[in-house]
Image (cartoon, rainbow, N blue to C red):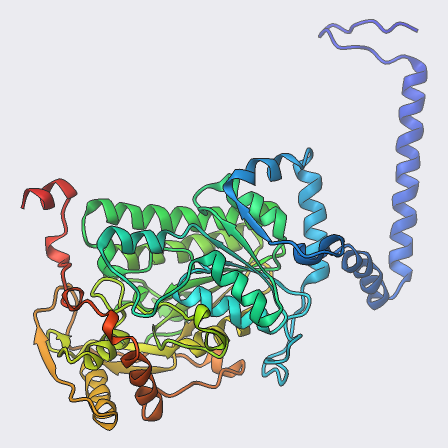
Length: 516
């Protein structure tokens, strides 16, 4: 039967079409009522178990063993468009991926007695953004050895920065592809590799879809304060790369892995040096008779630190707006060269920076002492910061993976184990150096940074230790061992790179720098 048009030009339904539509609606209503009754009668625990079972069975196999054969697990931008185009229905894909992630998540308790077991991470799939870097590489191997399925996402820009500036790692590091192959050879475990830029959302989305992470550890940012203060171009790059990259990661979680736990590396430098105690992320304030718990005030001391402040604000907003799981790790200054995993073969050695742009204070002081160069203390040397060993860094990440935040909540941990002033560091290295046959000296150089050189500093850091972290102390045998390790590479040191070359007050546009 032909249908006419109504006054607005829309098709009119005939009687049979109306009947069919009515039958369908009534059948759907009956089905919903039946389902509601079944849910009401069934115990909640059984309902949960039955809902979870198909999700767990639907977990995709690891790419490394799919179809019963090993794959290289290497993904580049060239295949990003292909990977995205394979899903004709984005909403359907996102729902299916969320179901798989829910089935794969393994939430474990604090103080795990089996944290170092080979299957401690079974069921977890951890994407490590920036996995070719100092903290990222050590973390990737630590988690992989303990049974977590691991992928690395990295655009390798840290290596290109060395090439641009004429720097080098003290330790001779291999290329990322060779590193991953050697890890497979030594450990028998695969690490998936995605080479590309998180600021390219098409690439990042394809990587998320391919790997389906249950946790995403985000190290992938420009991490040097001096680099961000070199000139206008590098300041803009730092803010754009870091802030936009983190927003992309948050959107990728929302769209492709809504149950994925985002673990973001922040910095203790976000807090600055306030004249009150630094709490772990949040502070309870009473003002004019009213009380609230608010994010602790941030006062970053460089464009790098400010980019981290912006990251934290964006993460908190997305956590509340989208109900995702996030953890912000405000990390102190990391020191040390090796972990159990990077010591398994020379080709797995981690990078160690000693130059005045990327080298952190303690690593730089140790290298200066090892090669007979005076340790360079900036200004009065009273600048106090939190420090932690690279071995503690990887344990902190594992603890964060095993204790995800509830949906809609952002956990914040101050990730450091000890506090020292710059002068105290120099004194400890002097003492340790003498025990291994060195004669360390200390000199004071003008402070290139805009910062307080003497100040109050008392930061809280109990939350990770409450969850099972057992800190490694910096003193004594550890420093002596680190100095001995560094001495083996001392011929690779270019002493021209040791003295500070970036001044906060002189930061300018590239054109002005060239003109000078």
